[in-house]
Length: 73
Image (cartoon, rainbow, N blue to C red):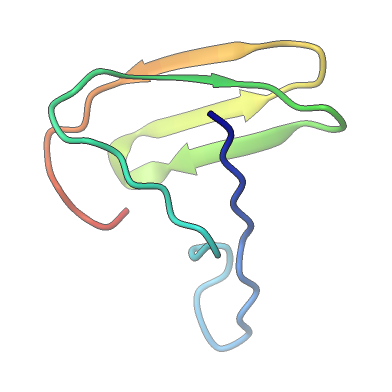
């Protein structure tokens, strides 16, 4: 499964807090993410859930998490 999402640059709103394609994640189910990059270092984060992972060229990083509460993050 591949997922792409890009930040929306609105001058009248908070910077870097909204994206064009939101990800929907299940509640109370272990989620495993494998991330990598083809060009430069990228970062994926959901600060309110304490999730942050970097995508580094030539390397696969993994993260596991479980979301206990529903919401828009």
